[in-house]
Length: 386
Image (cartoon, rainbow, N blue to C red):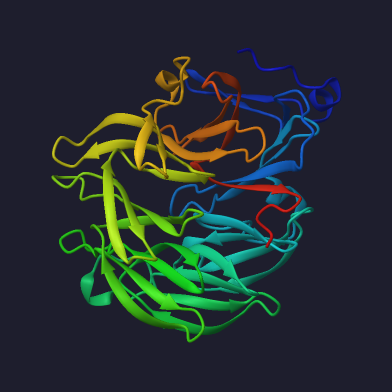
C-alpha cells in the first residue's frame, strides 16, 4: 500500500535532507508524516516508546494522532528541548495514570513523568535498573533489578518492587522479590511479579512472587517456568505469563495461572517476544533464536483465546507483509477499531518500522519509527487512566 504524500507545508518547513555516505544514501525524514485518513473515536492516539540500544542514550517517544492521521517522531525531545540527556537510555515500559504519562527508562535508572497530553516533563522517579510499571489506588509499582547491568554474579542484588506515591513522585516502600524481576500484574489487591533471573543464564529464576498490597509484603512464590518476562491479567483473574526459555533446549512459551484457584492451568509453546491483551484475546509476536545455531528461527503472530486457552489464529497477518518484517518486536490492538499494530526492530541498531493492520490482517499503512520500537499506550477517554 502506497504511503500518502506529506502535506506541502511539512515538505517546506521540514524538508528531507539527503546525506551521501560512501556508496549509500541516508535519508533523514521529516519528524511529522501523514500516514492515514482521520479516524474519530474515543481513542485519540497512541504513544510508542522506542527502546534503542543500551548505552546509546537514544530512547525516544513517537505519537500517532487518529484525528489528523499524522505520525510524529521524537515528540519528547521536540517538546522538552531543555532536558540535557533527552529521554534517556533504553525505554522499557510506558503507561498512563490519571493525567500523567510514565516512561520507564531502564539504564537511566528513572521513570520519566510527563503530561499525557502535551508530553511536557513533570519530573522523574529515581529507581535503579527499573523495568515495568503498574498502578493501584494512587500508587505506582515498579520492578527493579536493584543493581546495574552486570553479569558478574558476585555483584548482583536481589530485585525488588518499588512503591511510589504518584502525588509526590517519591518511593515510599520497597518489597524484595526474586532476581531480575520483570512484568507485573494486579488482581484483587495482590501484585504478581514475574522473576526472570536473566543475569544468570545458568540458574534462571522460575517463579512469580505474590505480594499483598495491603501490607506490601511477599506472601508466596509460585513456580511457573524459567526466565519469565511479561505478566498480564485477564478479566477472570487468570495470569498470562511469558517465558523466554533458555535459547538452547527450553523453548519459550505462554503460561496460564489461575489466581483464584492458585494453580497452573497449562501452557502454549510459541515464539514469545511481546504480548498484548485485548478482551478475551491475547496477541503474541516473537522470533525464535537459538544459541546453538546462533541463528533466528520462525516468527510468530498468533492469537490465543483466553477463555478456551487455545490458539485461534496461527498467523494474524494475512497479506504476506510478515515476510518484510525482520524482527517482530512490539504489538498492540486498538480497543475500539481492533486494528493491530506490529513493530519491526530490524537489525536493532537502525530505525525500526511500525505496521498497522485491519482485523482482516491486511496492511493499512506503515511508517518509520525510532530505534527498536517496542511499547504502546493508547490515549483517550476512560483508557489507561483509572
